Length: 284
Image 1: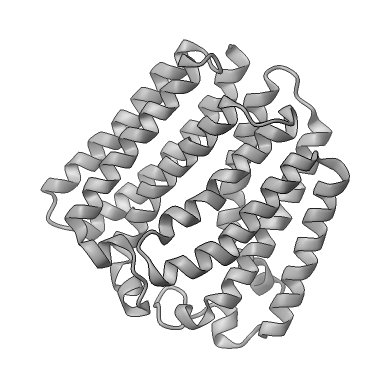
Image 2: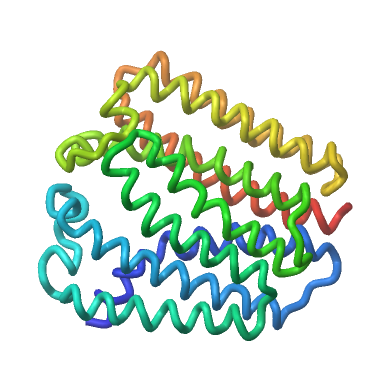
C-alpha cells in the first residue's frame, strides 16, 4: 500500500522538477551555496508537487481509465479511495507550504502557490477542451527553477525570466513527443493534444520551432551576463543536437519510434541543461 501512495505522487515528475529547481538555485547562488536553504527549498517543492500530482490523479481518474498506460493506477482500480487520496494530498500540501512559509521568502511561496493552482485548475480544465492545454501546463513546470532562483535572490529579474522561458520551450517538444508516441491513448481519452487535432507533421514543425527557441534562450544567459562563454557554446551544441534529431523526423517512416527517441533525447537535454546552468554560473 505504501508503494501505491508513493506512485500516486508521480515521483518521476517530482525528481525531474527537483533537478530544474536545483539548477535555478545554483545559478543564483554562484559560489555562495547555502546548504540548509537548499534542503528547505527542495523539501517544500517536493511536497507541493507531490500534492498537486495526487490531486491531478483524482481529477484525471476517469480519463486514466480510458488509457492503457494508466488503467492500473490505484485510483482507477479502487485500491486507494478518492477520499483517502484527497486527505493525502491535503497533508502533503500543508507540509510543503508550511515549510515554504517558515523558511523561504514570500516570493518563492507565491510562485509555489501559482504553480500549484496552474497545474490543478488551469491545466486541469484546458487540457480537456483545448490543444493549448499543453502551453498552460508548461507554466507550472517552468516555475520550480524560477522558485529555486528566487529563493536565493528574493526578486524577479532577467535571469528568472530566462529560466522560465527556457523551461517552457523545453517542455513543449518534450510533451509533444509524448503525445505522438502515446497517440492512441490520448485519442481514446478524447484529449485534444496537438497530434490528435492537427496531425503528426504539424506537431513536428512545432517541435522544431520550440527547440530553436530553447537554443536561442539558452544562449541569452551568456549574452546578458549570467553564465560563462563556455556555457553558451555547450548550450548551442546541446540545442543543435536536439534540432538535428527533430529534422530527422520528417524523413522517418515510424513516427511512434521517432517520437519515443525524441522524448528520451529531451530528458538528456534537460539533464545537460541543468548541469550547464549549475556549472556555468560557478565558472563565471
